[in-house]
Length: 422
Ligand code: ASP
Ligand code: MG
Image 1 (cartoon, rainbow, N blue to C red):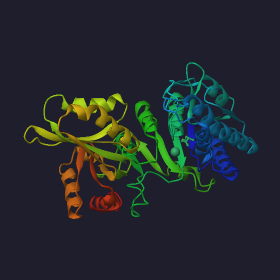
Image 2: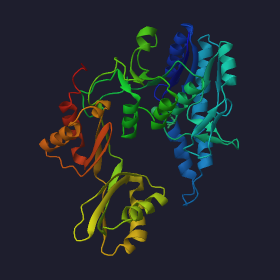
Image 3: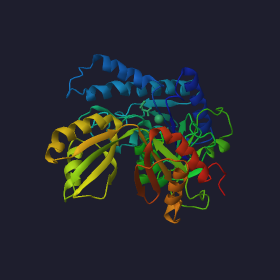
Image 4: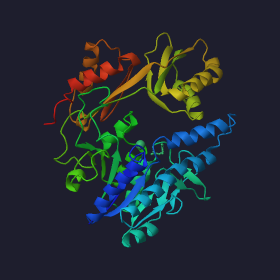
């Protein structure tokens, strides 16, 4: 008997029929002798619907963010789906109780719409489990010190589930979703993409931050910090498949490089089209210039990703960096207003039609020439690299958006990701 956390995404909770299926699956696990905690998302489309209503009524004035009320509103989606699931579980004959985040004290900071979990009080949940109940806890939401309802950012139910698993010291946290695991790349771009049976926590973290949408990045950070064994698997298998088969399906996110790890140099290719490039041309090449430009950007709370500075010529250089596309206009306006006037001859140009393609693999630590192979593959396809950034286990390039699919497919093939791991 083990304590297990199941998390079900919006699609898995998308209709009463699907909720009934979730209940049957959870019942199967409970009847196999496990203590069960279930963390559902809102029914698919519900969070968008609620936030859409708010948008119709919002003032739209800068400074009026309505964030506290948005959390009060959006959190109702998970409250509804949790209650429905508890009803379905009771109908299956399982004692079950549902709780909102504030009731089991999922304590967060007060950063409305993007709160961080600080602690979870496990007492009430523990008592219910010991009394033989399945406990359903809303995903996505918590409560701050002042008793205000908070939410954890879009996709936040993953993080709720992992945080609850950590607090309860669960044996495993199973994330049921509409894909059957973590793939070598997005199968919509490369049909030959393969499901990974295991991926290391560090690789998963890179993939999540580089654009793979399978898990919310904070959930992976949490899993890493508290060493929560995490598995991503499909909720679309028949609910009555053999539990032992189900328990081994999907992708396990592992912490040790044990011998079961797939031993590939590159484990996956990630990409994202969410960034835009800004170049400040002809800036004086002198100490403090990067700080001068990027300090202004940071002060406006805009995150910067890839950065390059060219060699200087006649005392002047070009400085480029990427920001999220949503921040692009704000960043350009700010540089034009505050920074450009102090730089003399300098000019600003931008490009929103870029994408970032990355190869990820812990094998890169011990293999040389991986990045150069990536550059060769791209050059053979005639793809120009605009920017490069690297870490121990990834190499990212910024390229023209129109070559994204070509680049992903060529790299996928070149690194043998379409072949079963040795
Ligand atoms: N319902 C929330 C969202 O749509 C949280 C989640 O699904 O994880 O973002
Ligand atoms: Mg999700």
